[in-house]
Length: 208
Ligand code: Z5A
Image (cartoon, rainbow, N blue to C red):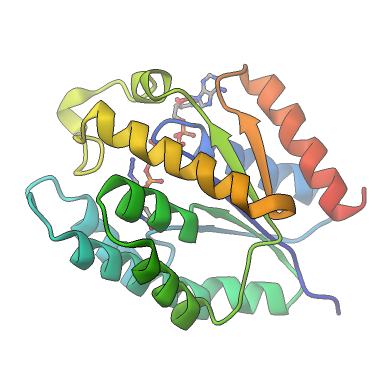
């Protein structure tokens, strides 16, 4: 049995990752391809507990390194329990955020050194790379406007516009350096247009 493909959706808040991850999973399943959905932080018992901590708006002033290490703890669990077993059994994995979120948010957003994230990536991922990372690039104002309820904002959603501008710039820099492993899709287009761009990218990867 051949190994499955690993596809990651990245982008700022409100870029459409969750919406389009669900769409892509359905689209692949309709074509007879087995799909496992993953998300970060989360997707395992440990990951979901860590997610609650990481998003808790009462935990103000969390040290950026603590935040980074918790993200990688959740990622390690997701790799062991969800991602690697699924790929090994030949399923595709559609993952809502992965290691580029740590570069974008903790390094570009919070100022943790890129070398520190690289060192963790090396240890925890042990050479695993997504077959394709799709960056849903979206203007910050538009992304934030898609999250309607200011009362229900989590710890990240309370960050400033400037923070999200740094995160967006970080993603774009990673994608520019990443070559063939990345595809930038304009997340400000209509849902239908974004889905056409996504399926174009996936068709190529699947050889469909
Ligand atoms: N984080 C981190 O710092 N470091 C890490 O390593 C990792 C994560 C892994 C939780 O992630 C937080 O963790 C995240 C970064 C941090 N915080 N932030 N920001 P999350 O993925 O759970 O949180 P999120 O990015 O805030 O998810 P989100 O707001 O749900 O965004 P989304 O999934 O990209 O958007 P969506 O839910 O698919 O869409 C939002 C709405 O917009 C929805 O009503 C859609 O129907 C609508 N939408 C989406 N696309 C379109 C288009 N094209 N047209 C019209 N309407 C659209």
